[in-house]
Image (cartoon, rainbow, N blue to C red; front, side, top):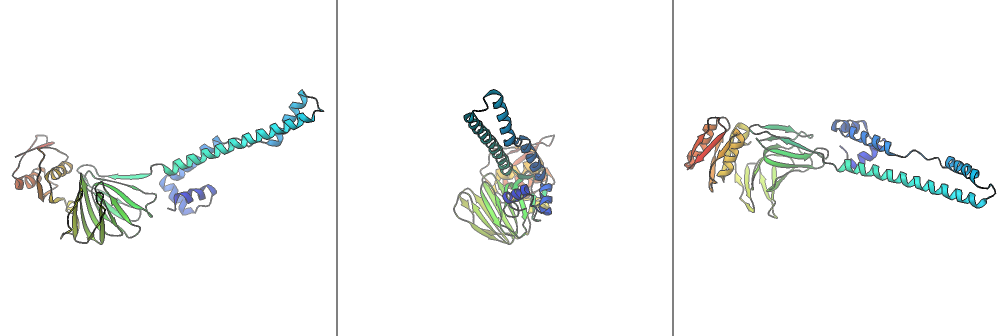
Length: 315
């Protein structure tokens, strides 16, 4: 869609194209703009007939004062001019109200949020045919109206992106951001860690805490944690494991792994806080098997409650 400022101005002037009118109606903004104009029209003061007011004022004065008073006539004209100025001010105030309401409409929050419920995966296609697959419990937020000129996405959790060529595409998280032009990549950002895999093209990874960037090419990954940026490492797979029902970790905090089990299976894990790293994987299809895959290599024991809602892990 064209720039909002010029588009709305041309809409008010009646100069928009049929395609722009269709896009406004699809986005719901056509109805909001129509309601805005209707509301402001009701607030506008009726047109004031200065000549009629002047004649009425003279007639009223002639009934009360001598007809020969030229001074009084001049006073009447001055008062009519004052009334005229008063109503001009009223019109100006109404115009300011219209501008304020229009500014509110332009600056209101129009962001779109897409979320995947716990234990579920969600797929979303953007207006430019770029696609994102959200892992369980993850979400994105972006501005749909400005998408063609500013493809900026806020990510919480993990997502796989297939980006069509076009304007720069940026994925931002509390840990850092990833910028691309057209590629396929995966981003996982929970807590203070961010893990990126690039499968096609190139991505630029920029940590929030550092004034430097790392370039990943296809077949590379990198881990960010606070001010620490690991060296890029090779990967052999061409798509994220989680889209195939497998959670894969590379020397990552064990507590992060247990949190992923909570999200995948909708359970509560009760355990000590572990200061240990885990490399390995677990599947998304069977809770008991997944716990064995994580706990056995770490020398840990687990117990699942009868209602399968609580998992207790011990040494």
